[in-house]
Image (cartoon, rainbow, N blue to C red; front, side, top):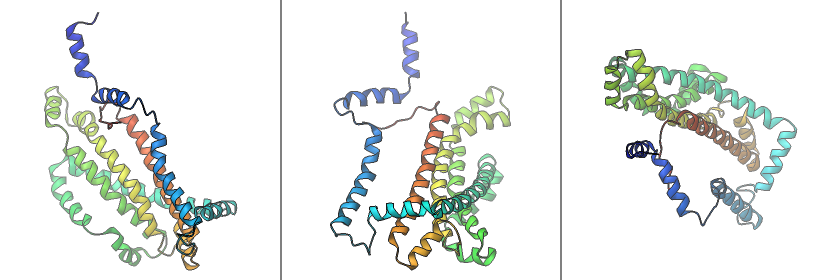
Length: 285
């Protein structure tokens, strides 16, 4: 039998989102539309509108190719191997730039977040450099690194560094001071405090920064692959631009978007696995 004390404890420990889900389920019991269907409704509606405007002639082919033409071009470029090789080349650049940028951002954010001296030396400089548009550094990167792979990777790395740094740094500094004091009273040293209190508290912010960084990596790659690329999605787009092939241009943009969406989906799954201990508000029905 559950005592009143047990009931009070259970009520206190029950995550807020459990109550919210129950309420939402009751309110939405009449409309049982799966969330996956609702999420897909927007993109599907846009594609349908695109198809209808192209089929009726409201959207001329010279302005934007129809989705049917884009799909045909996707099949053709996949069969001859151009699209898979372009995706592989772009993926290598994005992955290399992301790893470099993530390493730099993680190192700087830990130094600035954990140590006052690191904050004084690093944070003000990062805030200053953040105000510089990283796309505007392309001419300087060409002067420094030439026109081969290095400036492309450097641009992706730079675009990744800022969102990761500021989100990890902010997550570290937003750690509850009462938790830190309680951990010290329990005898945790500096290493234990960082491992068991500060870094777990910074994890939600770090994952948000990871989502931003991955999307920025693909955005930076769009600009980077305009620098004398001889392979990749940007190379296909540059060639298509010369011949006014809007179907190929749109296809490459769709591939960029799908790659970014896949990365975002992976981070969402990772967040759910790593943050199972954290009760979140997940919205009303």
